Amino acid sequence: MLKPKKKILLDLDGVLNTYTNDYEPCYIPPARDDTVEFVKKLSQKYEIKLFTTRDKFLASIWLIENHLDDYIKDITNEKEVAWLFVDDRCIRFNGHYDELLKDIENFKVWHKS
Image (cartoon, rainbow, N blue to C red; front, side):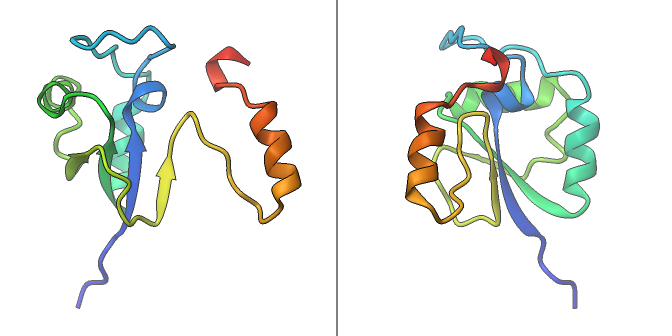
């Protein structure tokens, strides 16, 4: 019997595309270089869901236009049970609140660093 794949939620803006804080509700920026290769490789071992607050229909079109629809199982805007979340606006909690406070205060999005 095949072991089910662990689920990963991948954020769209700032992870899979070239978003840099220039949000437009009816436009999703193009995919980053090597996005297709990355997602294809990841999908071999993991179940991938797109995690975004964008319109689901618009995000679906974006996946098709960027040749990612075969590798991403679904789109969600809810924090689902998953093995891992990949987002450009997150901090990993290491069990220490004092360090977490510092990390929050010093946080910078990768493309603003």
